[in-house]
Image 1 (cartoon, rainbow, N blue to C red):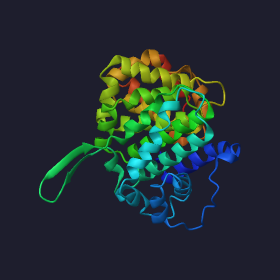
Image 2 (image 1 turned 60 degrees about the vertical axis):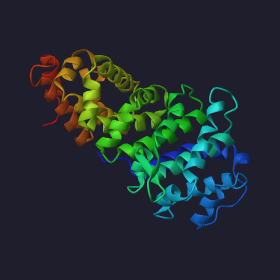
Image 3 (image 1 turned 90 degrees about the vertical axis):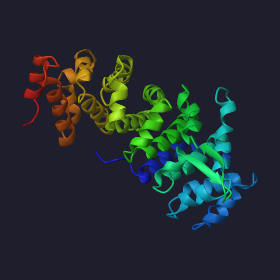
Length: 335
């Protein structure tokens, strides 16, 4: 399955935010966005509190005009700091009814620009790596960016209102942009920062889009051996993941979407690479996986059918699963 592209992330966010923006037209910046804005000028305008709102809005909606927007954002003095400052302004109203559309839009525009940085190969690692600064003679400072930590308060929120959902989705978009390159260092950082419980919460309380992106992140974490060990070395982690995925799979007819279901299925297949996980599947497979229901959902997708067959083959190998269940399911798969 192909990864989300940056354009797809952008479309998801723009579609989700469109109705919110249209229903709160008075919160939009008054200035008209130029067809081909001066990117350098707009970045400079972020420094001025009076022009920051317009600059964030214009850059977030025109972020693909310049291929080097991400390096410009990162290398412009103080810009990343100001983006993070804008993001942290939402913390103090996260648990109050004061999270109005205008504040949400400003924060989300800043998050979208960070997603641009996370998607660019020249700036992606800057969000998590350690940096040394010198005056040309000796090192004078050292710090680790740890930018994903700034997103975690939005992922921790249990609120399901639309404004919280938009913050959740844009924050997940940044993490998704980081993991889509299958980089072991990024996965190690995210596991150390305890991203998994936050993704599981988003898979529980988020809407369909948030569930899809959060599951995508978990699937990309599992691709790395460290990610597989993370879930299979501790029983509680394994069952926490399978419980949440099972709940999503066993939703009423029409849920989950095929795209989400395929990400979930990929997670199950990857987990089945571990013998201990196959033991756990004796009691934790979703009910839809135990009958023909799953086939009705994926019968027109050869890729998904292949993954489902591989899942049961993996379980069957080494007598890890229930033979009647496996044989019965395999017998109705297309040859």
